[in-house]
Image (cartoon, rainbow over all chains, first blue to last red; front, side):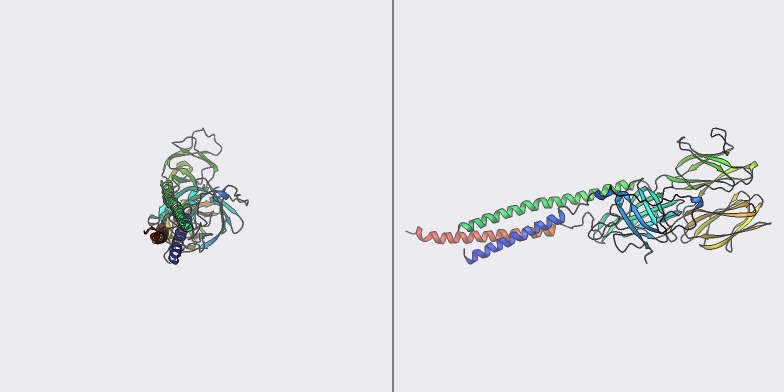
Length: 211
Length: 312
């Protein structure tokens, strides 16, 4: 084998190596990860909270309802503590600083008080699922539990799951007054706009207190 | 020489293998993109029908006739005779919680407490219930002139304000003036009348009900975004004020939706497969180029080896 031939062979082998590496890259990035993992696994075995469930008595509500501390959604295998959220300078609700925890908007009613309590969580981070990843999979009748700082628990039942374009978000319907104790769980959904790095829609779960 | 040809064969096999691997990868990428966007579209369609809490309405019933004994209050749905509700032994001053009902036509009937559900009602009224709205049906007036009045309750407040209205249910004091803090919200309101809602600045103030003979005072907190009804009643010792919270929302209405995702699980997440395809194509071009060079070199050597012997 001449020196020149060795060079040609080396070039051919290098080319093959590059092509193989490219194929591996393509397979790992596009072969499976483009698909969302199917909602399954830990969901079924998730236990419901065992704390006392406080029935609503709108005419004789306790003077002070404690602040919410934790959220459990058995159907989704979600169990998270709740942080507090205020407003941004733009007037929108602050979002939790991490994607693994949900938060309660402190200027909304406390869960169990008259009106819609607002709770936000991320659908995902830039590399994986967030606490509300499967929120859109909830169905009417699914239970949601809020544990409050005094140890009491209040149960809600999903009444509707809606998807709204953020450009046409029904502010009044989501945050506005209701005559009963309700809950809203909000996250992102719909198409992802890579240009702005934001999803174009919000998923809103509507729930009412089970009395 | 032999091992050179073998290198060429191995190179060809590898090229074929790379092509075989790359083809399903590309089609898988295309399929996954399609499947994911299809899933998003169907999710949107499933969630898109109707508005929130589809079809729910609320009805609340109150007994505000001072000299009428306790009653059983029935709520019948015209469309669905089985869907009836009954509140037993409702006495003067009692207000039920809001009952969640489907939109439609209803009738309210009152019978003496404990009377047979099939006996003719003392009083009845029909009401049209629109989905998404809340209603209060009041039994008002003296026993002799008892009637049912139905009000549609507001479910939104002006930004940063609270709404309040007054129901005058004191028969001992035919006219009552009610103020919240320094603001008069009902002036000389007569028995069995109801004011419309009015917007007030939120805060904690004392509510005063003033009639000729007696006053009543009550501390009431109205938060922004909340809607209240103040009921003036005849108590054992003069006037009483009952503060009903009709509805409540966020004290500061946020502006629109929220940015609660970074796209790490978005259907298009991995981006375009083009760069990877370019890398594969470049690698293949190099491999083919190298292979060709190798073959050319091999031929030239073969020619130079055979040429002298072929000469005569």
